[in-house]
Length: 382
Figure 1: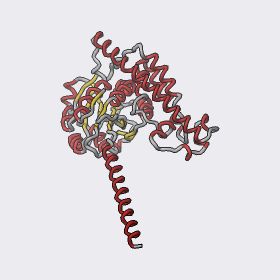
Figure 2: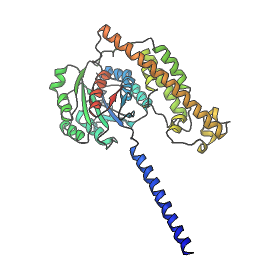
Figure 3: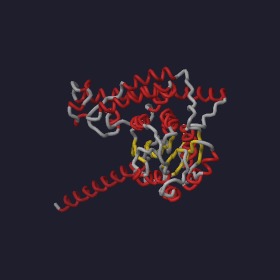
Figure 4: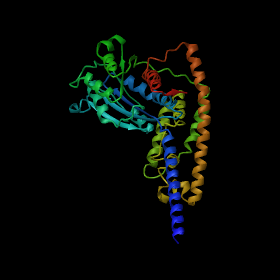
């Protein structure tokens, strides 16, 4: 009997060692899985009376900026792109808060960013750069990792020195948290230099650039744009609106599609390309994204929360339909990205042949700086 007990204890100990080894192996595997890198961009726009041209550039070049950020890779992984939006310098904003407003906190909802840009208006006011930088630094949920790319772009045309909050103190506080400040002066380079814009960037390890905010950003329509637009319509059919936020999210997506189409075929194509990237996430209202990210289980959803076409189905049929739709989306996105590679070559050649300079707009300035600064943090661009 004692021998049997001993034998049982031995087997029990062996079992514990086996379980322990399995858990350690699983833990090691989890440690080796690289986390998705994060890119956080806060855009601070002067919306005083003379800045309507800047707003137009920001609206028309949002998807160009998103596509550049989405093309980055770190350790082979695409980044999670988060964008925040502030406005400052408008007299209709509360004077007690420094004539500034956080429009959006850091978010992955890029349709919402587009919606808010299209809603912006301008009027006269005082532009307090130091105060809006401090507000973005302290008011946003910045990543604590030194490996992520965290950056502020502030654009405007009045002296950087205005307001009671010292811009030097704000910029030093910001870079102390690993957040770069890039300044974009809307006007003559030397005027921005003499009014503190370069000094602000220098204090926060950033770049100072100047742009002509009243010029139209360069747009090159490409032969691929028409096919990309058709694929964009097919892509939209793979979005399955669900839950309380479904109808609002789907309507916002369609509205921003229309906004892009109304501006130019090139901009509409850039938006479709952005929707084919890992940065375009809609898990709050799209069932495909939500299921892929593990945020919902089909069997946990009430029938009233499901898309209309899925309500009559069984749970197994719903899962099969969801997997089929996700596969269709991936195939469409792959085709769009292949066409975009051809489109980029065509656009680059046209710009070269026409001798056009793309550097004098808000979006071009942002793209140029992002490429340099993200590369310094070991991001690589495809």
